[in-house]
Image 1 (cartoon, one colour):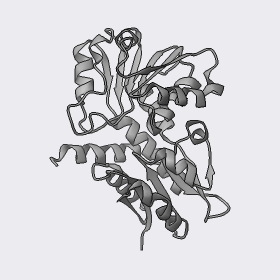
Image 2 (cartoon, one colour):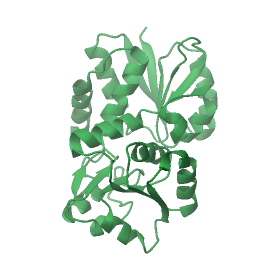
Image 3 (tube, helix red, strand yellow):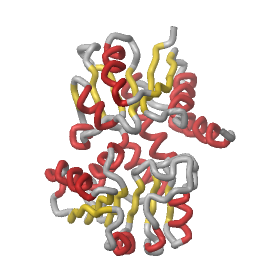
Image 4 (cartoon, helix red, strand yellow):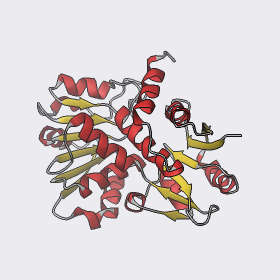
Length: 285
């Protein structure tokens, strides 16, 4: 029987993680199988208890459970400590019944930005849309990599302030601000940004905009971590304003590859995983 790995979230039917990881298992001749599990928040704790007693590799975690899982695992390590959010659960190296939460979103974001955008966060004026689990990981990267400014935009300014306060030890010389989505200063923040990232789920499978990017400057880099559709309404509007754009598929693939390597100890076949994801996206739902 294959050894299992999972992704948990709600909703989960849109996830490309199963096709990527199952392609990776096959390419590496590993007897493994990856499954998507739709869990409501109240089901997560019990499901993790069952995971402890199984021989599964572990699981990935997506919306809306990343922050909750960080409180439910036995240990939190690496960037997940700073982010307060977990997107990958694996087993403790010396006690298989202990679950360790890590965060590979940071790896995925950094690699995608470098490979597809040709930049890092160093010296950038970053506007980050969202204050949830994914946004927390991206804020960690911005601060670790030396952003000059970091503006966190959220529907409620208080939640953005909480995110920034939790990362105060990383801030250093970076200038940080929290802005509410409806704040009249948002247009000016977008106009002066050099890197804008949508880290919300707004636009997933829809034409909704997390914010209007019409005011971004020509040459600004705009990234959307949503990967379906490949060209979100947010990216289309940003390109119309003269921005360079990066979709979310690269981040998805690289964070998945890092999780695969953590579970199996095998170097991930990233191009195989990307090809599987691209093929799945090309098939009409």
